[in-house]
Length: 348
Ligand SMILES: NC(=O)c1ccc[n+]([C@@H]2O[C@H](COP(=O)([O-])OP(=O)(O)OC[C@H]3O[C@@H](n4cnc5c(N)ncnc54)[C@H](OP(=O)(O)O)[C@@H]3O)[C@@H](O)[C@H]2O)c1
Image (cartoon, rainbow, N blue to C red; front, side, top):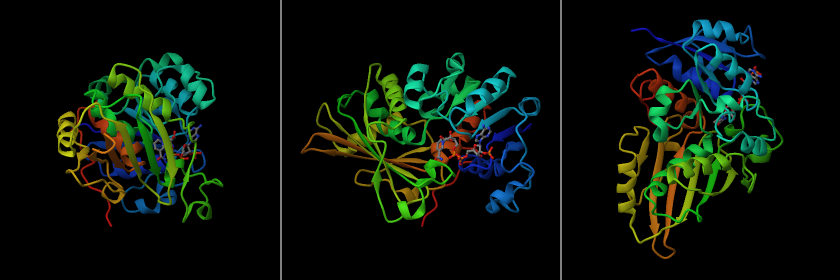
């Protein structure tokens, strides 16, 4: 069978490197181009020695014409604003594009410009893009020429809430999302906020009331609800490398139990191989999902306050980015959805 030929733009970054790790072991993929500006001419194993003996490929400068000529799909693991022109160029040349950045996630370019404080230069392309969360948009992903991968926080938050929103069992005005993320979520460029002495042995909330993933969470939950939803989202940085744990609370519209909630969520996710609903009384932990494409969800009902508690855990670089990208690629090219992703978390 003909293999899917893949280009990874930004292969030397955290999510690009994870993509190389995942695709090097994918049975239906041939890695055709790995690009980097800083490391062009070096081998991918010079940047990621963990890949020695598995792959031997040079990093090259991006040439969009060559990528379009030789590849079936390009993954853009580059910062927001940088993906826009590259995606436009590649889409015009007819190949599939999966973008990791925020450039095509928000359906309203004005909302993008407000939250990202940058002009949107390709508003017409937004209409062509599909929000790449297969658990909500599997059939649209299958047909999409441009997939906008969700942010890492929104993946965990939306999966923790979608069934409750869909079945209307919570008050849409009372949703609170508290997420805790490992530091790799900020990418590989160090900053004073992510420097080891600043974050080791420390905890902090950041971007309170202003995190850029907020409108994305609202957009997708509103689409599931069929009416406007505004969630209060507060991210926290924790001294871990990978992983996001989100604790979501919302007022219930009627009495329930953890067992009922687990049944409801299992029904909603019956065709979603990467969502694992925990047994009542069991809650997700980062170590069970780290390095894997799973999102674990644990549910509780607090009778005293009549609140739903939904806790999700995922690996920000895998299910939050590169693993989700592989899952979308599998769907687009009619491969088994779990192909190349059949492994659990790294524990201990
Ligand atoms: N880290 C996460 O957990 C996570 C999760 C979900 C989504 N994302 C999103 O995924 C994207 C990549 O994130 P990351 O964490 O992997 O970032 P990163 O570690 O900082 O890597 C960024 C990559 O982009 C390349 N790059 C930058 N500007 C470029 C340009 N104009 N043209 C071509 N390549 C360019 C860089 O390589 P050169 O400078 O060598 O070209 C580098 O390889 C971002 O949009 C981010 O928001 C990240």
